[in-house]
Image 1 (spheres, helix red, strand yellow):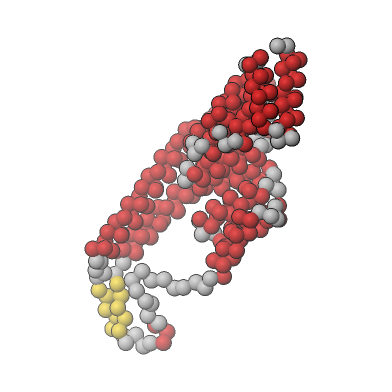
Image 2 (image 1 turned 180 degrees about the vertical axis):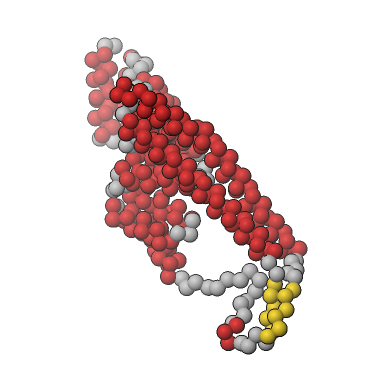
Length: 319
């Protein structure tokens, strides 16, 4: 079949797809593939149909083929990354989407999908950075505000969560998830704060004459000791995981960004990529590295605070 006929088949299939005649469109794209196995238009159409039908493995196969047929097109990598997210393959998704960003640093969709993958990989700070970048590139991306707001809820930063839920609603007034999230966040914000003492009720010393304070060693029950050990183990494991993740990020992202910046500066006007773009990638990597360090520091402080709390003496005040 001639090239002209393959193009005509794909155009006709595109028209069928626009009219939601999915079965007819699929048959036409398949005929085009049979005539020309490397028809990018046919693979794109079949990938789109497979995505609509939630046949994600088939969609992934077609998008993978498209990355080979049109290697300079970032959109194929972005779509492949999104499909990996749908399939629960978040490590693969993050890897593919980082490649997409190297090809198109101004794609809000690439950063948005990367944020989804990183959140599922428990890389909350990195996910926040990705969503913020998506919003910077597309200030009307309601879903990015929505997902960023959810991360702020998880980190107990309710004021920022409320702000981002409102931004999501401004961008997409009918976004029900944002409305529900905003209601819950505002309810949490209005909830009265209660004093908390892990050792029991606080003594209101202002209304009592305190004399002869007696300090006694804190005694723990077996259940309390078990809970304490579990909390310490959880924090230690989390610090270890974050540290390994940081080292991996240093090797895969920050170090290459530094080397690329040095190379581009050395080449000067001969560089294939403008210095400003390379510097932008470098700054993004540095920002993510800083977020890594902040997260680890916060977890270490939590561990220290827990240790101090456990080792603190219990004070009985007698009036």
